[in-house]
Image (cartoon, one colour):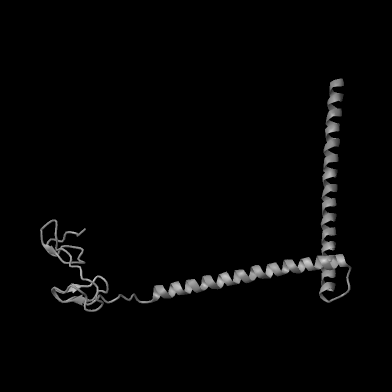
Length: 173
């Protein structure tokens, strides 16, 4: 019987502790709720004094300093918003330019006019000169006459600037 009484006492003690814990939790919740209400009232007081500051009312120096701090934070917010708008405009302009470029018809540059048969092209200015010319008739640069290049596969003569042999189609390195 003593065992059962002891077990009953232990159960009652646990129940009392659990009840106390529940009550403590409820009271802590009430404390936190009251602190939140105080914070709300403090915010209203601050907003009231800030509005008084904005209208030019005479306020204690400490309050004026705090209001000036709020002004500095608001100025930083305005600067950040302006920067966001600038970035948006730049992004939209870049997107519009990209879309316009994508929609524009592709224009290919006309190939340079072919040099007459046997003409030598000046390496300095790109103008064709007659066969056997040693100096460019356009810019006066010395004309370097390249050695004849032959295709490694078929031995055909390769003209300067050609990337594939016209006889066998081998790529010219």
